[in-house]
Image 1 (spheres, rainbow, N blue to C red):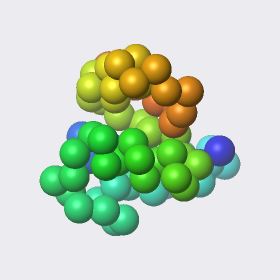
Image 2: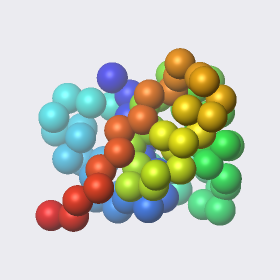
Image 3: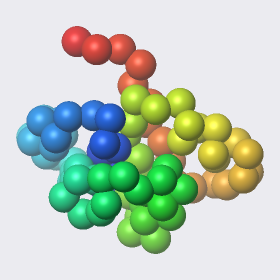
Length: 79
């Protein structure tokens, strides 16, 4: 499973996810930090990544476009 971390999550998530056996990349290392959610979603879809975010907008984008992909993992709690 390949996971793309959104800008609103710390890059420190990358090694945590990699240690758990996932391929992970933070958006800041591959794209424009000010890219729109639509751009990030398009990249994730094209490159077969799941978006990991704290942002509610990604789920809304999926619902409004009735898209099947990319999947979105949304975390709403800080530890």
